[in-house]
Image 1 (cartoon, helix red, strand yellow):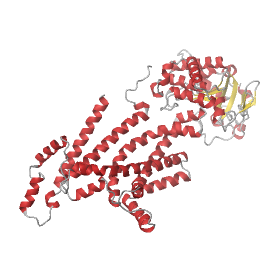
Image 2 (spheres, one colour):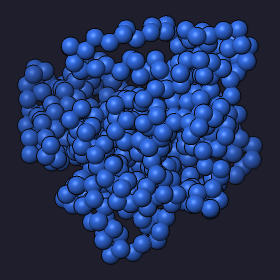
Image 3 (tube, chains in turn yellow, brown):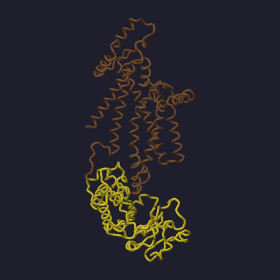
Image 4 (tube, chains in turn red, blue):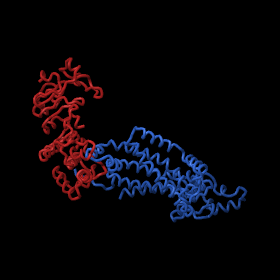
Length: 262
Length: 310
């Protein structure tokens, strides 16, 4: 899944830090990559205590003994601001924010190099979202982690990312350093996305975002550039030919007219 | 414990309804003395037995004195052989328990693995074969399967005894007859419950954590899928007893099922009532046990479970 993120070109060319990634062995995979999911409570087995949930990877992936596990859990719980009294409770006894901290603790416990966060805060209250995002930023800095942060919330993305990739109908259409992206994206879809972000200021009267109509059926994507039926800049070539992801000096975009638009 | 009180009250209400219903229905369907005694008996003898069995008093008086006797642990005496009704029934209980227990075991040992396999390979040929067999299994009438087994294994192959009890060989066919239909149902419940659990987000989490397929099955899928299956199991114990009546008759298995059919036929009121009370008690208790297991299986319904401070 990870490897196919960038239009068939591997984001990680089958290797992490020089070591080949073993897809066939879930344990080897688990030591390298861990996930945090959108719905924190239902992502935890309702029949297992938090201790059991977090201990499992330590036992299975690293063969830690009881004392080592206890020490590791204490360390991780302190890192994500959870109290150890939670360890013997069940998932349904927690609020969404607490459960997501547990989800993060669970992912961290396996000491992965990469954590894939699939909409990790979109199920949470806005006030809790900020706590979790800040926690993630701190953890990343402390532990030198790589995040693949999947989100619809461009505000959160701006806060947490180093590089941003925009996907449309299953393909990456633009990939750029955060500052460059938010200063002015190259792809028309990425532009429309940024224009659609609401500004919480009634005095702000900016240009009306372009209305694009409904997205096409992803099972039967349009010919050529997949965005062409909704693109205000579309021409003949867009209908006929799928644009390649081209290099624009440190950033990439898949648009035939990227030069003219920017 | 409010929970226990409610459960007990509900059980008592069930028992009262069963006893009352059986009491009146049996008496509404014919005079036991006339049925049990020879046709050419003279009026005086008939009256004598009616008096002896307490059938002359008004119905409601009979009802009240029956309850009084019940509270003293007296289930009355069998009209047929003047034995204590309870002793007569109790003597048969181990036989039925053995048959029912074996059938339940067969049902679980066959039904659960098949259900799991069908769920894991959903929509494959294996799933279809298992589910077709299951439909066949519980559509086939119990007595028919029993007679079929007797035809094949007793009359044709002469491998197993067709009736009676005593050896393990006697147990095989009745237990299979009783167990297979049940196994088919358990397979279906297990399958649907597993399918539901397999798509839950925590199954994806387990996979992302690096848990292998066997571990995901044993640690994550099965414990969660077993909750509804256990619930069904409790209700099915009563059904199993109902089927046992038929099976015991087919194989002349000397359990309470056969005693029941026989006693109903000759209006042996005390024995029938005693059996009904024992069956109803079994039902009530198996449901209570299910409630307890349920709490153990599912932490969310655990009684008195605290909730985390927000």
